[in-house]
Image 1 (cartoon, rainbow, N blue to C red):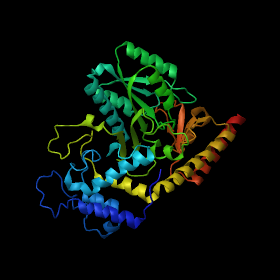
Image 2: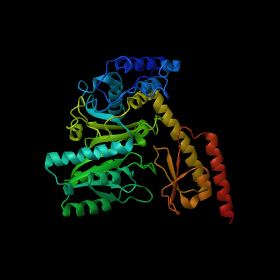
Image 3: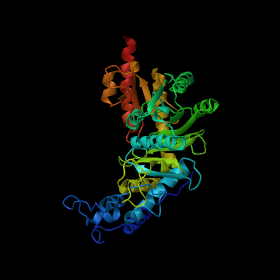
Image 4: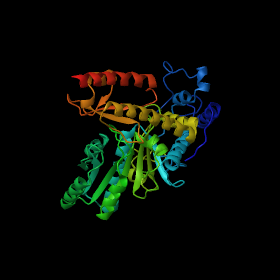
Length: 417
């Protein structure tokens, strides 16, 4: 895993070069595009600071990145080819350097978020089973754990694919294989033949990482026909950098696609989800009716801002692989310190050792203290079982020390009673 760090001038020059290869709405005789420059009453195009602000300059340029440019490099909309190239480079870097894929063996795009990226994967595999196996919709099932993101039941609803929700162990948060076997076997008896499997690279509430080897061993031993997608919306920009035993890569032949989110760990703006998939599968999302779009469209969202792709490229280049690894390790070190203090206080919690999320059991902390520091409950009901802390970049040592002191005081008073 290696890519070079660039300085600000190098990043700025590269982005400005990309913008110069896009159309200029003010100078190009452009009569057929249903878009224009941003409203000049609100967005001042001659602002001098734009020369040194590559993201804002791209935003003002207003590129539309409709389509999948890794798949249709020479056929995509030609008006925004400069910034489209930066999106291609982002997908290549993520697919090969971070997710371990072979060179030029991945497609993908920058989606509005991880929810769409997950639905994109499920949509592709539903269509794959229908087109390649003539599968009926009732013969396809979506399988995910009870800790999985809500985009899974949303996808089930949107795509009319039945859900199989598997129980997890309350302490380890790992899928219970006996429950998986019971539910898969029952589904097969009812006529389900094809399975879309979701594995989590850090669940939203707990930061738990699914045991992908246990899952795929079971599926292969039972001759189950499946496609597997990894939801790394939270973990994608931390887990691959710090884990010594990461089986969730494209080196694993059972993995077909990934979701990773820029707007979480990478600190890019909201609207920077990333979908990466092996070559040969984006075609199952082709909307052939989009004949007026050069290169056609393969995505759920269609039109999307090219500025979001550029901000991911900028952030990755600003750190380089080594700088990013150090940054993620620092977050884990801070998380370790908090866990050590919780251990001394006798607080029960769940935490995966390679993820910066700590889920504290609700009987170990008062609702008042949790809400004062804006911890997130696992449910909005009156009686949550867990409260979540995420050690993000804005969570400084002083803030953590103050929280831990108040928790210690609260625990001491509780024990005296």
